[in-house]
Image 1 (spheres, rainbow, N blue to C red):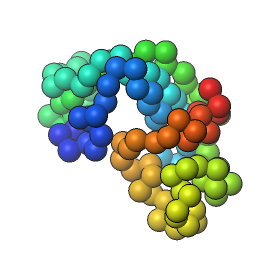
Image 2 (cartoon, rainbow, N blue to C red):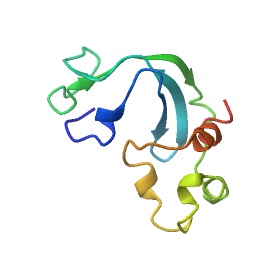
Image 3 (tube, helix red, strand yellow):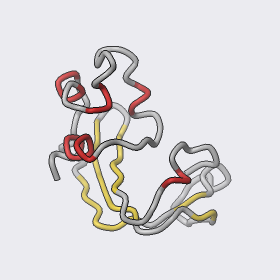
Image 4 (cartoon, one colour):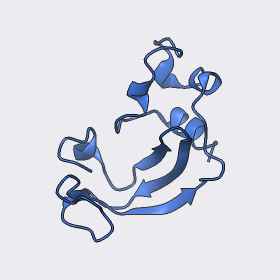
Length: 111
């Protein structure tokens, strides 16, 4: 994560996280296993831009069958209850944000 990554300071071991691939959908999820710490990691490109790392466990990948965030799925999400699911939806996937347990289940295929 970068210095200004939203939500970084709130990550706790035991939290769940899902990963969105631009233009594809939610393609993975995991459980946070450590708090973020500032250190270099050999697999992180541009460590000067992304100095914060944390461990995850129980990783589930579904790269071949990601959860597409289309209008039908958005209509099921708590995050869009007070918003027009057709407009200004980029805010939902462009940053790390806290979501409800319900939304996490929907986005991860009910896993």
